[in-house]
Length: 132
Image (cartoon, rainbow, N blue to C red):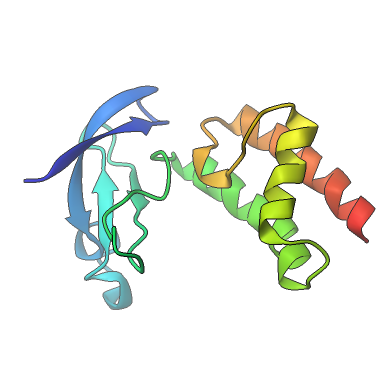
């Protein structure tokens, strides 16, 4: 069994995650059955992979809890229209969020807490208002 050290938000620590597939984590979704996922055996949370790249088992970030995953989705509903419409580049959106947060780099896949997600959402709201 393949394992990899990944930060797990549910466990609050680096864990030895196991490589599995969508058949295990989404048994009701046949369309995801063959896709790779990293799963924490301690809490059962999981993260998807960059399956469309050469490194198809590279994790998409840290392993989120369901609450953090939901928060990330809310953030994407706010920021994705900014770059999809052409109002900003995708990199520009992430750079702007990092600037507001006062950090060198930012990506939603690295959000580790609901509190952090709230700060990111507030930053994204202000950026969206400026871009409108």
